[in-house]
Length: 390
Ligand code: NAD
Image (cartoon, rainbow, N blue to C red; front, side):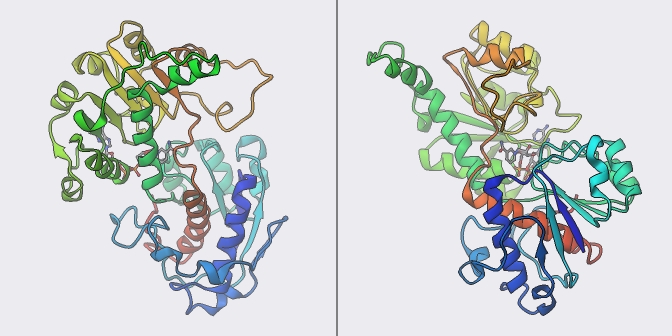
């Protein structure tokens, strides 16, 4: 099986080497499949073969690949699968797009990350080239026209890396804005240690509304439980697991009305695009704290900006931004950046923007690379063999 892995970052290389070592040397789930040890080759400069022994039981540790007990769609635990005997992985740092789609020629599978926009046109070309499997090393699949891929018979999976890292980041953003850390840091740079205007609020005394009570939303609720916050939730598909995590389900309007902090943990879909619009904001409490670590396009940026200007929104923290591709995860220090909304919002003392890095932990990088590679191998084994197929 020939796999081409796009968007490989430097920091992912050790993870890829470890994945191949695990796959090649066999782990608890795949130990019986001796064929995996044969013929594994990683093209390029990624070393293979090291580290397998120390990583064999990682899947059982907290924060390793999600376990079998996860929700069925998300249970991306390493799975027993009879993998093809000869696997090659070619890696490139570039994203996959229309201009370089020919580079997928000769590969059965491609593994991408969030910057490769899999439009219908790109998918058509991939199918023509004989690519059958597509894995994204991200949780979100909004950069892939999944329906079109299915029409073409192209099988797609995402990754379900552990939710803890993103959830912790969301909690951190809440604390940063509630304790006014951004203006505090600004002052410190100029030896201003005054306290005026920096009085904070305690998270444990506030009501937090979680919109989207899936894997990350539930983990945010668990963390907030430790602080003592009141946790409300809204999701069209309420779950007992979320209730067990401390979430009290209420209608969306009630969540908006009662929450001091509103945090978004929903996927970007056509229905969810712009869901935080003027109407939604008007239902929220005056001075509400809005946190978005999900996708920038979930908010109507004009409405949110206006609500900041008129102090309806008390603080905004976002790890994502509309049209962030080409800006976030790049060094653009000498460039003229064309994203006025981002530039304007960035200057407010009560707005904290981070460059889509909530996922970015050692645990998650390992998990993303591992699940991307394992995903395409497992899909090649037949229907239903990979839990995070979408
Ligand atoms: P998940 O599928 O486990 O949960 C999403 C939940 O949202 C589901 O329960 C779904 O029913 C619910 N939902 C969908 N539309 C809704 C709506 N309009 N109102 C309320 N609930 C709604 O997904 P997850 O693993 O919790 O991830 C959530 C999102 O977080 C991802 O789709 C991705 O966009 C984002 N994400 C961001 C980062 C980052 O680094 N910033 C990392 C991982 C994930």
